[in-house]
Each structure stands twice: as structure tokens, then as C-alpha cells.
Image (cartoon, rainbow, N blue to C red):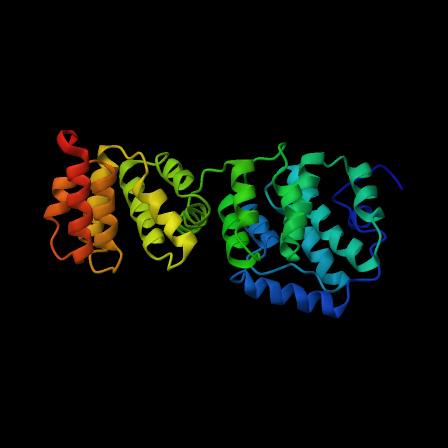
Amino acid sequence: MATFDYRKFEHVFYNVKPFPSREFFQETEAIRRKFDGALFIDRVLKALGVGKAKIYPAKTEHALRTLHQQVCEANMTMHHRLSIFYYVLLDFEYANKRTAFTEDFATLSGVPKKYQIFMRGLWLLDRHEFKSALEYIAHPSLMPDFADDIITTFIRHAEDDTLALAYFHTVQPVLKTPQALELLFSALADASISQALHYSRTYPEHTRQLLFQRLVGSVLESGAGEEAGERGVELISLPLDADEERWFEECLTTEFAKHKKAKDTLVMRRIVTGKLDEAVAQRGLGSQWGTIIESMKQGLGNRV
């Protein structure tokens, strides 16, 4: 082959036959629907200004030539063009059960290794191969691009929150959308009350307060059982600052006031923080609470 020129279709896609099967394209469309109408390659193309209509996947050679032309004509860096071509070549690797397509292309084009890693990770996400995708998209050489979408996809579509939390702890992305933040924070709160509290403190006051309220709510909704009890104990034992202490009282007496666990949670927090007089004054408690709290007061003597 002559000197590689990405603008020439034959240099990029010279040996990509046969095309992926009909089942591959059907599967691709099914996953696109699961992802609320946008694959990760769709997001990449949109971000780089390629095509208003969906041009991926290219089901015929004519469609593939159109995709190639639009990528070449769009206003983007050469590395971005090569990355898109690299992603599309992964389809042909999958269809033909061989790795030579991307290996040859990377050698000829010089597409940087980190772009190869990132696009392979996105391709695996688009194929629902979440565990394999994590190995690539969490690579230390990468910037946290599309982090909100990645977090949201992991939490909504993976078997559990493990992959989302692993990605978050490894990459430490700054999330930009309320939706992704809420999903991540709920996953953090389910995994560790104290870690979720620490994370909430990285945000400005208004957002921080909303996250704190979500944290309290997640514990109240934990249900019954030993694990729920442990979460409740962890919550009332947290080392809160003055703002968080106020928010704790406020949300249990307003937003969550009617929750069956709210009053008990508030009383236990007051006991833990040494506010036994306030706990005793709490109205509407079960009869066992008054006896227990008064006994604690007598036992503590002058220390209260």
C-alpha cells in the first residue's frame, strides 16, 4: 500500500469484508434503545460535529463510504478522525473473529495508544461488555470523558453498582449532571454511609445539603433486618459538623417527619450526641423510650 492517507477510503477500509451480520446490526439497535437512544459512538460523533442523522452502524459499503466522508469533512483533529475509524474497525474484527484490522490500522495510521484504549472501552460499553469495558475506560492514561454517561450506564444496566463505584474511585471524575450525581451518590450511600458523607462535602453548600438529605433518606428506606440496623447505627454515629447537625434535625422533623423511623432516628442521634434532655422531651415516643432514656440520665449523673 502507498503511504497511508486517512482521506482515502481504501486505505482505511481496504480489507473489511464481509460486513457484520444482520444479527449484529439488530443487536446494536437494541442496545441503542436500552441506552435511551444513544450509543457511546453516537455521543462521540455528536460531540465532534459529525452528521445530524445517525450514520452508525454502516450496514453497506455505500453507507460506510458516507460515514468515512463525513468524518473526513468534519472539523476535528486527525487523532479524533482516526479514533472513529478505529472504533468502526472493531465491528469488523468482531464479525470476522480476527484482530488484524485494528492492529494494521494502528500501525499504518499512528493513532495514539490512549485513543485506541478509550475507543475500545467505548465499543465494549456499546456491546454491553461492562466488565471488560472497565479495564479500558478506567486506564490511567485517559481523561474522564463522558464520565456522567459512563456512571449512568453502569448503574442502570450493569448487574450491580460495583462497576460504577470501581470506575468512580479509580478515575475520580467531576460529574456535571444532576442525574449522574444522584445515581452515583445513591450507590455510594448503599455501599458506605461515611464515604457518601465525605463525598457530599466536596460540593457547594446547596448541593451538599441536598446530598445529605438523600443520605438520611437512603438509610430510612433501608427496610428491616441486621444490615438496615447497622446502617442506622452508622448514620446516628457520624461525626457531623454544625451544618450537617442542623440539616439532620430539619429533614427528620420536616421532609421525613412522617416516616416510621424518623422519630426513633432523631432520638438516637440525640442520645449519641449527649442531648438526653432533648430526647426525654420528645413527644409521642413509645413507652420503652422514656424508661431507657431516664435510666441513661441517671447512670450518667452529672455528666449530662
